[in-house]
Length: 165
Length: 165
DNA sequence: TTATTACATGTTATGTTATATCATCTTCTT
DNA sequence: AAGAAGATGATATAACATAACATGTAATAA
Image 1 (cartoon, rainbow over the protein chains, first blue to last red):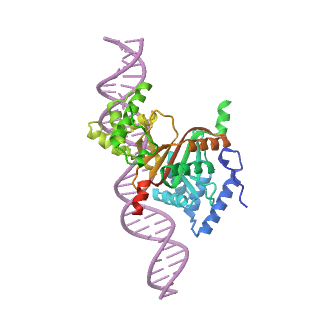
Image 2 (cartoon, each protein chain N blue to C red):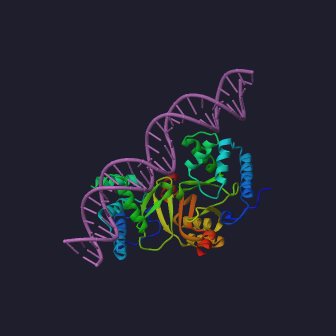
Image 3 (cartoon, each protein chain N blue to C red):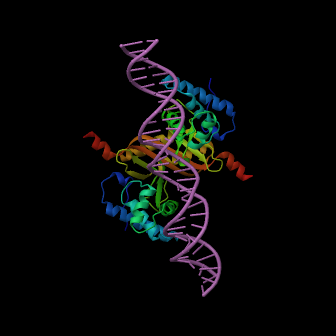
């Protein structure tokens, strides 16, 4: 069974082997259920994103992909990333022009991204409250929401502690 | 006195002359109060953003600036835009790689941007609820929020009405 | 099986967005 | 009037992203 996932695991010390392994399992299952194909490039791309709790730029992904024997041209990375994003296995972090693995694949969620400006770690916190508030705000002005992107910049717990030393 | 500003004015029929004029007045005052310099390029840049309730790309701004007799090189536009953003007179809409005038300069606010995917109009709605929800979510994980960026994609009231015809 | 179709991968080429750096000029301060 | 800080302009280049086409692979139907 997949490892249990707390909100904002990224900011908490954890066994990352287990963490990323669990996400990969969930991704596999999601892909199977949806009849999609997690081809070698796509799988490797997801692995790369899962290596750290950071958002990774397309060209950095590309570099690592080509080292793994895949193509060297930008579309190789962009296509794999697009596939992952469209199918809920990764997110695009616009502020950083970069991509991060989805840590709750398969769950419907309105993710909020917390980005530490100190250590660059990105945590995804599913949050009902924010989604609800957005719905209310949208209703008030008659706006029909398709999707929302919430990116929060600040200092993560670890860096707050570190800075205080 | 400046025109009164409703949330999401952008989606409502209004006298845009009065609307943009009012914002410019507020901007002038804000700049005066803060001891900043709204130089000709900067002022013209803000005017350009105020012409429509859309987000405008840096290179489109640049083109119009050069037609107005200012420099033709990217940094001309990027610097003016950066100034406006840093001083709360404009916002960067990351999903669109573009910039929009701030419609409530001077007010402290946690803006939510509603972007119509049909007509591209961008409305800025100050919203307490979303800000509060974000604060709560941040607290829960011990994240110290510096600033948040909330961009909502969907269909504006006018386009909903239009599509129904 | 093989023909057909859909999808995936790879390449070339190019488009779009953004910034570093240096020279010149203006404005403010002393 | 001199010096410091800030603004503008140009050159050059970096970083991010996509269009278009050729080739290959997998699934499906004849």
